[in-house]
Image 1: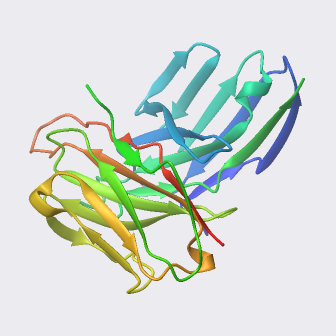
Image 2: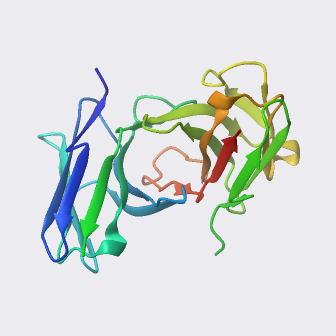
Length: 113
Length: 118
C-alpha cells in the first residue's frame, strides 16, 4: 500500500467546473506539496502546506493534519489546467537522509472547452 | 533568486546511447535529490547528495546510472547505455541544510528533463 493515496486517478471536467483532487497519507509529515506536471513533462510546485489553507489565483489547497488529508481545488477550471497533479509528502521528521518524499501516483486532469 | 534549473528539458536518444542530465540547485542548497517518474507510475527516489557526498543512492535502478556532484554544486546523472525502460521524466530538488531548532524549510523542484529512449 502506498504511503500516499490520491483520488481520483483520472478526471475529465467541462470548462468552468469546480474541481477537487484528494490526497490521503499514512505517515507523519513535515509538510505536503502539490505539484503540477504538464504534458511536456515539466514539474511545477504549486503549494507547500503544513497547516490550514493556501490560495493562489484559482487554486486552493487545504490540509487537515489530524485526518492526514489534503485537497486541491480548482475553481472555474480552464483547458490550460489540464495536467497531472501530484501530491507529495515531506517525511523529514522520519528520515534525515535519503528519500524524504513519498509521492502519490498523480491525478490526470483534462478540462474540455 | 534563481530556482532549480535542469537541462536539457527534453532529450530523445536511441537505445544504447549515453545521455547526461544536469541539475543546478539553488545556490547554497547542500541537499540535492534526483527523482524519476516513469510513464503512468509514481515518482521514485533515485538518490540524495549532501554537498558532494552521496548520502543515499538506494533508489538507483542499476549500474547504468551514475550520478555525480563534483564540488557540491551542480549534479549530473548519466545513463549509459540507455534502455527503453529508462524513458521518463527525471527531476531534481534541492533544499538548504537544516539545523536544530530551525523552522521547516521548503524544497524547490526543478522542472525536469523528459527522456525518451527509442
